Amino acid sequence: MLTTLTRYEPLAGGLDRVLDELFRPALWQAPASALAPIRVDVRENADSYTVFAELPGSGRDEIAVEIEGDEVVIGAERKRAEAKEGESWIYAERRVGKVQRSIVLPQEIDRDNATARFADGVLELTLPKKAPQAVKRIEVR
Image (cartoon, rainbow, N blue to C red; front, side):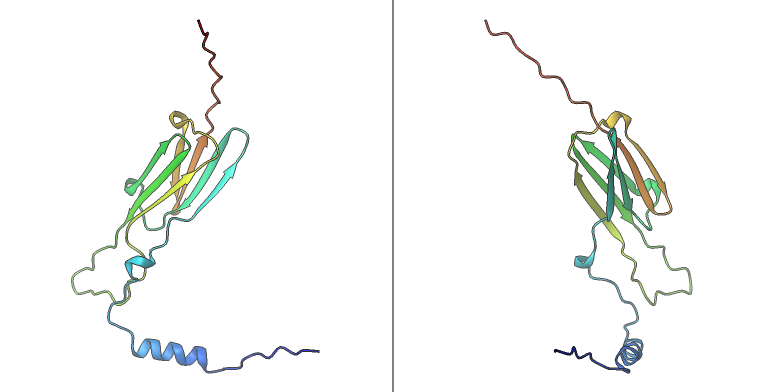
């Protein structure tokens, strides 16, 4: 019978936090390469798709949605508030800059009837499915 050994380091977490605070830079920013894409959930029913996209820190006027056929492109720009007089940033961990996400859906979207709602940092898109077009037969003469 094998027994699994676990590692016991009672000071590791606490010591790391103390050293991080002691040697932290005056201003830390995440590298640009660490920017995560927009996270989405996509739900489907018989008539439409519903896309929920996380866009914390973005305003309604900073969000763009483009629909072309079966592809939806969501873009936004996140901005950091300027420090007021006499203030300076100690930490700057929230991501800022442009973000974009492209989603290809299984069926074309009726973009004329698509709707968007933005609340609590979540964009909700209701994307009706486009009715399939009937096959057109051409008479050969």
